[in-house]
Amino acid sequence: MTLFDTIVIGKGLIGAAAFHHLSRQTPNTLLIGPDEPANKMTHDGVFASHYDSGRLAHLHGKSPVWGELFRRSIGRYRELEKQSGIDFYTPVGELYVVDPHVENGYNDPKNIEHSRKHLKAELQSLTHDEQRALIPTLAFPDNSLILWEKTPAGHINPRQMLQAHVKVGQQYGGKVVTDTAVQLKYKGHHLQITTQSGQQFEAQRVLMATGAFTNSYDLLPEPLPLHCKTEIIVLGEVSKAEAERLSTMPIVHYDLDSDTLENIYMIQPVQYPNGRFYIKLGANTVADRFLTTLEEKQAWFQSGHSDEMLEDLKTAVLQLVPGIEVISWHTERCMITRTPNKFPIIKAIIPDKLFVAVGGNGSSASCADALGEMAANLIIHNQWQDSLEESLFQ
Ligand SMILES: Cc1cc2nc3c(=O)[nH]c(=O)nc-3n(C[C@H](O)[C@H](O)[C@H](O)COP(=O)(O)OP(=O)(O)OC[C@H]3O[C@@H](n4cnc5c(N)ncnc54)[C@H](O)[C@@H]3O)c2cc1C
Image 1: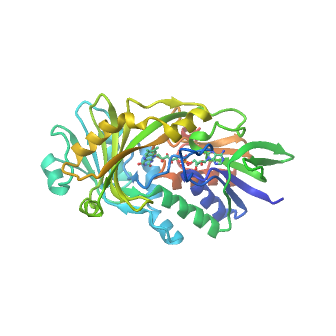
Image 2: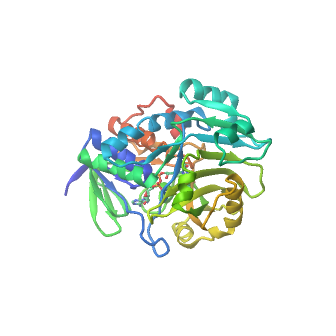
């Protein structure tokens, strides 16, 4: 049996990036994870938080730490596209909008100053007239505050970005197995992984990048303090002509004053794997729930009642993009993995053996590259390598 230097469990956004950065330095790396299920309704394994075609990406973060993670990642998108031959990034700029009396990190003057100075984000406050002149397709309440971030802010296709990382990892010699890990135990000085299909693999070290399903199997000695929240998005199908009309629409982050929705995010219509074009809007909603067991999470992804927020989410799209011609609407279900301090956990669980990189906190698609690299460096050097404080990621 091959003894791998490192096995990464979880072919999600952070796991694929870690696989890329590990394989670059130690090619004897294996990535284990299932593909996206063909039929989510009947799938009874694990699910992921990246089954989508659009994720927001920007330099300005809700705090300087997130901003630094975004800066590192966004600066490498083009290189990753080139190396993999897979395109995933569309720079279109971003509008941050906030209603009066709503507090958020994005509009904190000190944070804005930090992003301008240290991340080189081009940020500009806009009046409503300026916003309408610049981006006539979007409308916000007259008393809201508007901040405009120029490119490189934009959106990424998370499925494509994941494939790009996997492909580059394979170019460096890393191997991939499509399966789900169900048990991890010591075998002599090594770790042994058993998968759902009964295969076994051994490694010097293991990294778990298993998202919302981290505590679901017999993999960790103790569960991690992860809080998995349901997330609902609405997709509005538009014609190709309508998608072209809206093709310069920036991404939107809107902190609104509402009883049913908060933290709206929206992406211009993009093409999905079925060939159709959809505008996407998501938010925290009053229907959101925290789920703990494997069965609860599976049931949510399979057939949770996401349509309960359809009307609210649909109304939000119609208000923000007046005149948009939508052919049909439907909701999709996803899950956000939160940690107690709101930063990902990247640390050794068993020193020099078992590591984790989990807890995306709803913001780790765009900076998965930086998080994966951080985890890879921690494993290879067996100590914290990063200029960001280790204590933040514990
Ligand atoms: C609706 C929605 C919108 C979002 N919007 C944004 C955004 O605009 N910008 C942004 O930056 N972030 C966004 N996020 C967050 C982002 O998608 C997540 O932070 C990111 O996907 C987390 O990456 P991950 O690798 O931790 O988890 P995932 O991408 O979920 O990957 C985890 C992987 O682990 C695998 N896995 C689990 N258990 C096992 C096992 N036992 N064996 C093998 N494999 C296993 C799963 O199959 C999965 O592929 C959004 C999330 C949601 C839900």
